[in-house]
Amino acid sequence: MTPPITSAETGHDHDHDHDHSHQKLPSDPALRVKSLESLLVEKGLVDAAALDAVVEAYEHRIGPRNGARVIARAWTDPAYRQRLLTDATAAIAALGFSGSQGEHMVAVENTSQVHNLVVCTLCSCYPFPVLGLPPVWYKSPAYRARAVIDPRGVLRELGLEIADEVEIRVWDSTAEIRYLVVPERPAGTEHLSEEELAARVTRDSMIGVARVA
Image 1 (cartoon, rainbow, N blue to C red):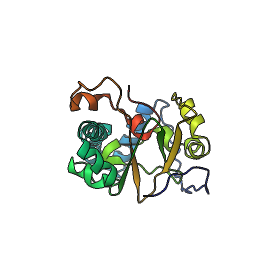
Image 2: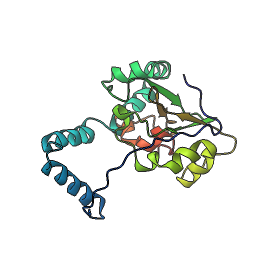
Image 3: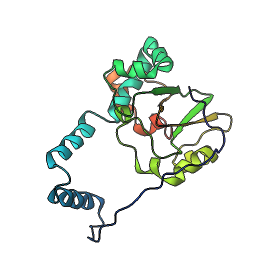
Image 4: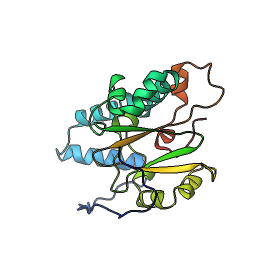
C-alpha cells in the first residue's frame, strides 16, 4: 500500500494543449454542455447515441451508489469489511463493481482516532466504478495543492471540523492506485438494513471530506 502523504511533496501538473473555439457558448453550464454536444454532433466528431449511452451508464450503473453499497456491506458484514481492508479490488469486484479506473483499489478506514482524506496531486485520478465522475472541486488546483499542506484547514472550509487529537492521513491517488474511504458508521443505526445504510452514504464521505449523517 502506498503510504499516506503527511506533508507537501513535489507538485506536479499536466500541460495541456487547448483548442479555443471562436463560437460563444451560453454561460449556463447545462446550456453550454448542450450547445457543445450539438456542435460536436453536427461536425460528425461524436455520435449522439454513444453520448446518450455514456450518460445513461454514469447516471444508472456507475456512481456513488455503488460505493455506498460497498460501505454498507462493510458495516454489516465483518468478514466482508476485513476483506475490503485487505484486498479492496477483489472485495469491490465481488459486488460487481470493477473496470477502468478501478483496477487497483485500496480501502482506508476512518476511526475515532484517524480520519482519512483522498486527493490526487498529479491531476484528478478517481475511482470511477465506485464513485462515478469526480466533483469539480476535487480536480481544482487549490484542493490538490492545499489538501496535502493543510488538510485540517481544507476540511474546515468544506464544512467538516476534525478535532485536534484526531490524526488526518492524506492519501494521494495515482494512475495505479485509487482510494476509497470507509467512513465511520453513525451511532444509532444498528436497526437499519444494508439498503437503508447505503442510502445514507454520500460521495463526499467516501472521499473523506464529510461524515455520514
